[in-house]
Amino acid sequence: MKELLHDSLFFGIFISLFAYEAGVFCKRKWKLAIFHPLLIAIVFVIAVLLAFGIDYETYLTGARHLSFLLTPATVSLAVLLYEKLQPLKKNWKAIFAGIFAGALTNAVCVLVCAVLFGFTHEQYVTMLPKSITTAIGMALSKEMGGVSSITVGAIVITGVLGNMFAEEILRLFRITEPEAKGIGMGTAAHAMGTAKAMELGETEGAASGLSIAVSGVFTVVIALIFSKFY
Image (cartoon, rainbow, N blue to C red; front, side):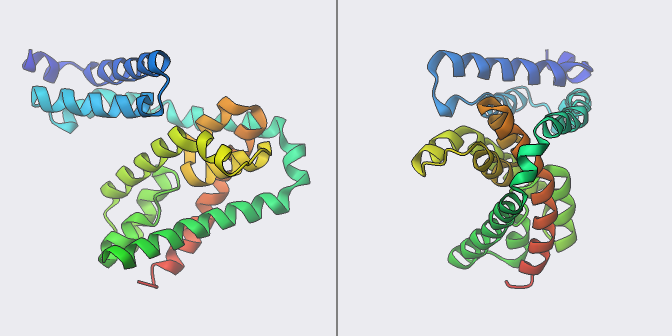
C-alpha cells in the first residue's frame, strides 16, 4: 500500500480534494468554526503522510497541480472588482487609509510580540509578512533574512483563523459597512479572508480583493522599515 501511494502520480490531488470535502461535510454537519474545511484538510493530510511515512516531496508531486488553479482563481477577482469599481472609487481615500492602517497594525503587533517574547531578529522578520499572500510573503521574508518556509506556515494559519472568526469579530465591533468588512478581511487574512468576504456579498468580495494587492505593496514598504527596529 505504501509503495502504491508513493508511485501514484495523483495521490496528492486525491488526498487533498478528499480531505477538503471531508472538511466541508464536517462544517455542514456541526456548523462550528473549528471545523473549517481548510483546517480539517491540513490536519487530515498531515495525519495521512505521517501514518504512511510519505515525505512531503512525494505528496507535492501530485498536489502541486492544484496550485495551477490559484492563478486563474486570483485573476477572476478582477471581474468582481470591475463590477463594483464605482462604489469603491467613491470611497477610495477611506479604503486606502484603512488598508494602510491594517498593514501598519500588523507590523506593530509583530514588533510588540517580538519584544514581549524575546524573538531573535530572524524570527521577527519571518513573522512580519504573515498577513499578505504567500508569493509576496516568501520573497519578502527571504529578502529580510527570515525563514520563508515558516513564513508560509504563518500566512496559512493567519488566513485560516481570519476566515474562521471574521464574522464574529465584525459582529463584536459592530462593523456593518460592506466595504469596511471587505477591507478588514482582505488586509488581515489575504486570500482566505477574501474567500470569506465573497460569501458575505459582492461588495465585500471586491473590496477584499482590492485589499490583497494594495496591502501587499504597503506591507513590503512597512516591513522593510520595521525590520530595522528590532
